[in-house]
Length: 282
Image 1 (cartoon, rainbow, N blue to C red):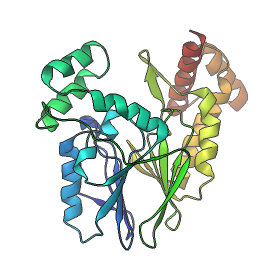
Image 2 (cartoon, rainbow, N blue to C red):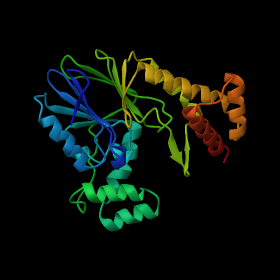
Image 3 (cartoon, one colour):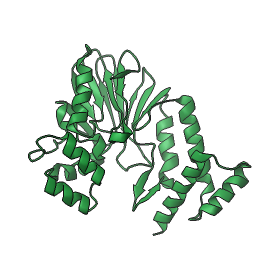
């Protein structure tokens, strides 16, 4: 079921048990724009089925926020002009070369190109896998792109991110709503979950320059300004305390700077920033 954020913005909530991110829909007077394609053809088709229940302008554009498979594998279903930044396009080329038969998928799992869970979802939710091939995007931009859907402007921007190097966000100025995809999250490298320290403050600056009241995230669905402010404060406070590969030192520094123990979120972030230090030292 679609959630209605406003008269012109809808979203389908994330389902983390099925590795499905939030999908967005922005409607103008003439056209609609979809944000992220879903983790499979089935995911995309379920989203489209919900959209068809409403009397909305036709979908003309699809924006993919980054090239992780849970955001891209439903691309073919929308029949829309697909928009990606140039770096995402380069990453999609690898996915376009993939084969999706069982033997190929098992090989990708063996070589750690995809996870076993990813293979299970593809096998269950993408029919005709022997002939399935991901389509190429039609619009490739470098930094910023503005789309007018008919009295509804969407600003599409590639930003610095702690999650990937190819993150795109979508801002709707008249609604003060921004779709962040997974941009504000950390990532996993060599089995270590980490937040990229070098990217944190530039990312927050990129996002906070937009006057937004509501934030749609890939795996939390929706946050308001208060929730995002707390999130940024916890991240930056933890970040400031991490100057080495020692979690013990980071916790001690945090206590010294803040005169209190870190809360559960801050402790999680401290570990993630320490992991980033460890990865950078390797």
